[in-house]
Image (cartoon, rainbow, N blue to C red; front, side, top):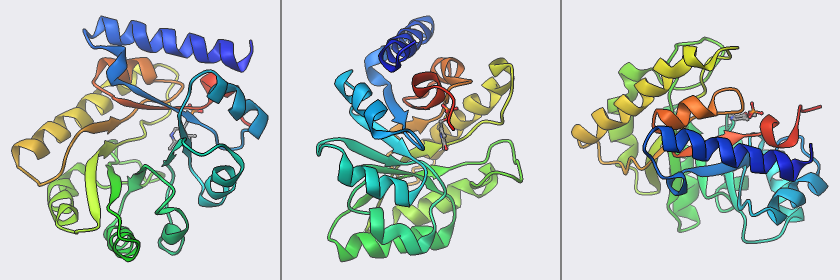
Length: 227
Ligand SMILES: *Cc1c(COP(=O)(O)O)cnc(C)c1O
């Protein structure tokens, strides 16, 4: 199947999952995750109407940002080192991976220096996997409240990466928990705009949609296996 056929198929699956959950597919943003994907393939999905791209490495994002047309929306979805914040702060629409306090401070400073407000999601490690970054649900309320007080930061929501599994039903509770945490934060008036739930990848995006995801980060289902 071609990349465009894959893209069409992914969109159909998103629509069907949204329908099952009584949601409108229009409220769900599809990020094409382009890490390691060559430019020609990325250009194909842009032709197919994709406008939002996700990268997990700073270097690769900066390069593709330079090589691809302007007007695309770039998302940094991977772990971000504090010394690389300045390289991407004015290029990305959203940083999905705010996962520790020193990074919040660094993003704040870099944003203020450029006279912008950086839009971020707080990454949560719901399943407590030691291999994954992110705050524990217990730390979340205090962290979000503190981050929301930084003038260079706009906390727009939460992000999680579910544990890998063959059967996506197994990670439904992870997605449900992220949604509950967002509702809890809203009730606590943590000061953040909790608009976005970034959850769902190739193996589990339909379940994520059913549980309220409004940003999906999908690579393999569109571009095929990475090399
Ligand atoms: C690579 C990556 C994805 C996309 O993964 P696929 O399984 O290929 O869809 C999503 N989120 C993050 C943070 C990633 O690094």
